[in-house]
Every structure is written in C-alpha cells, then in structure tokens.
Amino acid sequence: MPTRLSLSKRSMTALVALVLVGIAGLALVLYGKAGGSGNQAAGECSASAQKSDSLAPLAKGEIAGLRLVKVPRPASEIEFEGPNGPLTLASFRGRTVLFNLWATWCVPCRTEMPSLDRLQTELGGADFAVVALNMDTRNVEKVPAWLKDNQISALTLYTDQQGKAFQSLRKEGLVTGLPTTLVVDDRGCLLAEMAGPAEWAGAEATAFLKAVMGR
Image (cartoon, rainbow, N blue to C red; front, side):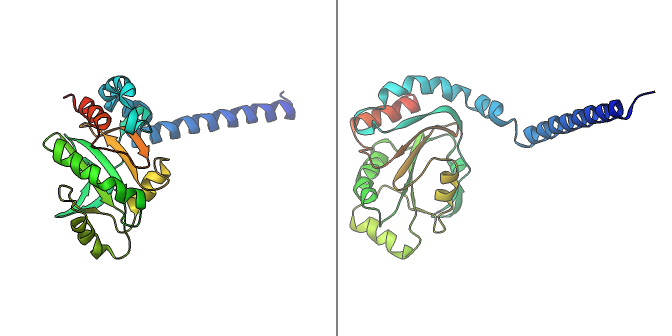
C-alpha cells in the first residue's frame, strides 16, 4: 500500500502538471486573441522588413538620428481629429506617412514645421503624406492662426487635444518628448522613428522617403 509520503508526492506531481497545462492553454488563448502575436505581426510586415534592410545606409546627414525599428510591425491605431472628423493612421493605408507630433509651445517643433511643409509640397500625393499631429491642449483655437502667420499652408491640421497619441506612443517606448517623427510605409508598418527635429525637406530625408516609397 502506498505510504502517505508517496501519495503526497504523486499529488504534487499531478498538481504541477495541471498548472502547466492550464498555463499552456491560457497562452494559446491569449495568442489567438492577440491575432498571432509577434509572429503574425512579423508576417504582416515581412515585405517591409526586407525593404528595411536597404534603408539603413540612407539614414545619414540631417536624418542621422533616424532609427530603424529592429522588426517592422503594424503601427498603432492612433486616433486623432482631422478637418472632417476622426481619423487613425489606418486612414492613410496605401500611402507612406511621415507622422510627426508637434506643438506651438515646442521651440524645436516650430523650427521644424517649415521643412515639413516643404516636404508635403514636394512629395505629397497619392503615395505620400506628412501627417503633422498638433498636441496643443490649451488655446487650441490659436493653432490655425499660428500656421497662417508662419506660412504653413501645405500641411493639413490634425489635432489631439487630449494627448492620447503621445501617451500611447510613450507606452511603446517610441516617444519621450516633442517633436517625434515616425515613418510608416504604405502597408501600415512602422519602419523608423526619430526624436528631435530634422530638415525633412533636405536631400537625405527625401532620398530616404523616396526609397521607402520605391520611387
């Protein structure tokens, strides 16, 4: 007849096995709910990853601070307001997007805005857009006047008065301050990010973005 000790050991073994099975089952459920987790995300952006390898040598000069993400992944579904109502980054699917967070109280942002405006003028169209998202949370009614006074005419005014985009990107480790810029390709995959201002209408930036677009 088994001893109490042997029964105890058997019980503990069975309990551990049940716990491991439960953990494995939970992992499968979570994996399914997450849509395939990292593997599926990598699959969705596999073509973008292949392109990304050729972009690294182009991140130089005025955009030397641009960092390519290690594994391109679907960009977050950030919500914001456009001239005609709510939008997300997915609204721009099919176009390469230079997504920029800025504010009128941010001195480097103000310095950078004319180059973003020129970039939109030069490259903007069916396959490219500068999406400059204003993060002012006070006196937002003054932002259109600021753009007009500084002759920023090519950029559409997108706003996020509650700062949700900043908070979302901060949780992902993509933003710590303003300005911050993300490069999202036409598949909606995040390719690169940059903290701080840059000369986006310069030769290096336009060459990089044209390479992303396949021009």
